[in-house]
Figure 1 (cartoon, rainbow, N blue to C red):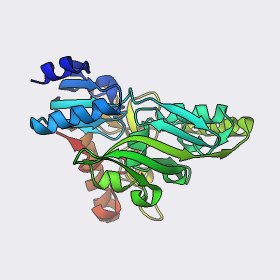
Figure 2: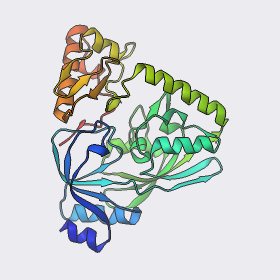
Figure 3: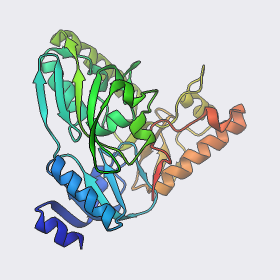
Length: 303
């Protein structure tokens, strides 16, 4: 049925596809269908069809916040990477949900616009960055966000403002209401010095290179730091640095990173996460609620 729909509407679709290059853990998971709508109209048509015909579906950004529990996703994966509009107008920019956040940050710097330097190393797309209020270095996406075009569960396109988004630490209205899909975003930046911004980014990169396991696929830091503590130190104190389950390993360089060292599965990663939570709790008597998974979308798994 979906074959006929995508063919008749000229929507790009592939069957029985590996998602390995579409998630930052490089988990070799297959999906039934992978679809690339080319514009907002196609997104609306596609979602309407999937809902009417009871297809299971997942809108996937850059896959940096997702762990696939199984080796197959029995449904339709939607990539919005063709929603790639980038329009600068003074200190404002209108950008499609499928644009890479790091690409946009570099373009802003080249246009001598500041506000996105924190995001140069964040491996996400704009839509997901809104949803999780992506951030680093005590800055976040909400600092530059003005508004977004959003597709509602009733297939209406509405505009949500910064206030409507109800942003908080790595959270937003979109993340709490997963049936809403970000389509396009307006950001407000400010004038900046290109050389100074590039110098800050270079300094940060050198520090990351010296302290983080960039040579392995990962999703960045896994656990949020409990107040007054560092998650990596807690995991290290529990003697888990370098510990492996299957192909997944708690990094021997930075214990708050779980890396795919050798063809890990989602189950390997989840088992390591649970082990770390249990061992830290035993070692430091920290409640689960204070030692939470940092980046992964609730419930952290895609089945």
